[in-house]
Amino acid sequence: MENRLTELEIKLAFQDDLLDTLNRTVARQQQQIDTLQNQLRALYDLVRGLESGAGRRPPAEEIPPHY
Picture 1 (cartoon, rainbow, N blue to C red):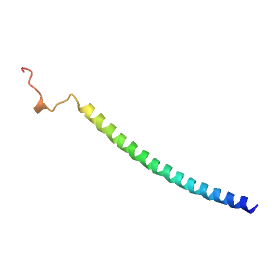
Picture 2 (cartoon, rainbow, N blue to C red):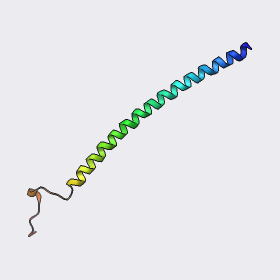
Picture 3 (cartoon, rainbow, N blue to C red):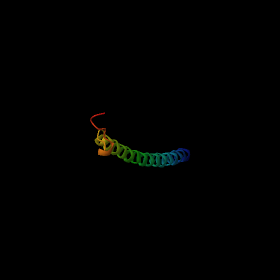
Picture 4 (tube, rainbow, N blue to C red):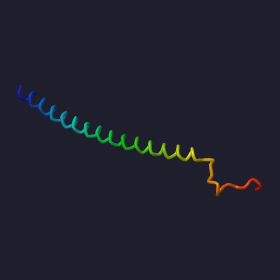
């Protein structure tokens, strides 16, 4: 009986350690996802800004119509 109890305690200790490890992994991955989402949003905004300004040149850079 005592051997079974000891085995269960050992299994529980390993499961607790595994659960803590998995929890830290999930938390780290969530931070990485949040960072990537912020970077993607910034890149999207940058591309949108470039697209909205594309095709328009400042008047000083426009080619006169006789060229």
